[in-house]
Length: 422
Image 1: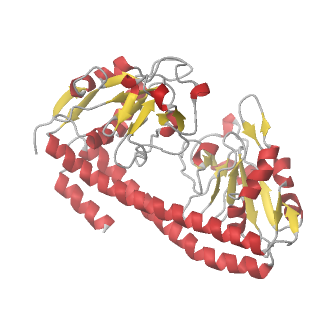
Image 2: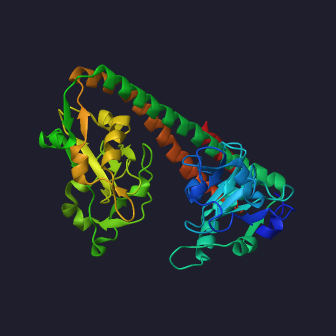
């Protein structure tokens, strides 16, 4: 093992005046310049505190290439790290071979670093600066009152300990092998969801002319239970208790619980049906409306927050949970929902009355059963991939702070990874 040395970020930045820089000032790239193609812009939503996501390439906005060329100091290329300076500080991103584009513009609320190639390996640096200790250090240095901030001067002076370059690369390879396997499993899950959507579309086409029903009618006919989440009083927070599943934790086809707030167990009777059950379909109804997921047997119990609507299929129902889940992902759902979404001063929302008025086709039972039979195999594959990813992510999160501080030998970590990932 080589000697570890402590550097400031400024000391490991590549030569050149643009190696440490912020995004364009003020409104230089405000929303009026956004397009559907051109040079992509990295905003806060494209970064994450989740180490698995080095860069979120979904939901990008773009600048005209000529406009983007005006901001040479704010261009991030392969090997560059990106940091949030206003908002969710502690987020770190990395532009690398996984990224969809060769270069990006960082927004006015982000900063970018081009590391010195002889001092720092970009992937090692990404892991080191994504470690719990580094994130806590950044968040602990927050400036600003209403919106957390971490500025370029603070980034320059942030300290990081590095071994020799080869050792950095070896550590990054161990952690990267876990993330590579996680990425493969994510693609398996995405493919399974897409195939399920296709099966649902086929079922819809073969059921043309079938009876229709509103969700409210299905509820009244005892085919379905539904409701919004539990409105927790301040006095009810605490442990031991049930974690609250919030809107931000419902993703595209899955939930990623933060286990942040809990409602004390003694209030379970008041929560009633708003406590999760395996097989529930959940839909976000405020803010980012329309994210839908299904609660699997692997998930612990939650209590739903008010902005999460749950659907619980009853025995003998005319619709299955798989059918319901994919209907909420369908064009028909969005056609109706887009006409209903109401605007508050803050965000779009669907009321419970809106949800109950949604109308869906009800395929014949034999076709529904055939769809379920086919999708059951896809769902098992999807759940297997996600289950393995939870194990891999737990292992990576355990090894990461040990490896990036030299507290565990690389060969010992590599042996553990080989046993788990094989």
